[in-house]
Image 1 (cartoon, rainbow, N blue to C red):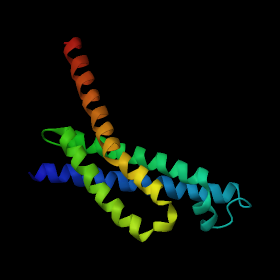
Image 2 (image 1 turned 60 degrees about the horizontal axis):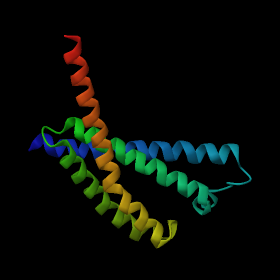
Image 3 (image 1 turned 45 degrees about the vertical axis):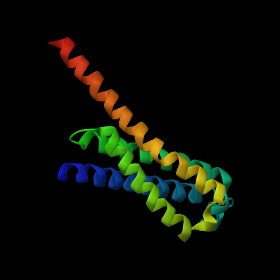
Length: 141
């Protein structure tokens, strides 16, 4: 039970760290290299290409969280990753109410519809890696 909880928490921590690190680097880079287009954070928030890129890296970060969760989970890695995704979905609903102006409602709904599948996909990658690594080990013996 403890390892299950730790697996889910590690996945959430990983996706949060990866997502915020990418956001910090991208936002700083965009403002540095394109100061006229992005003179302030509000300009970044208003940019549709930035929002699309934010959605992509957020979903990839969730997949990384699902991967980490699945690798740590003692059993049923896909189930653990889906639980991690469901918790992330609940937290995103809270963020939606706090930052409602960041995206239109349809954007929030579309993003939230992808959270659990992204976590599942990350876990599936971990599962496939584990199977191929096990298969490779058996062949070399």
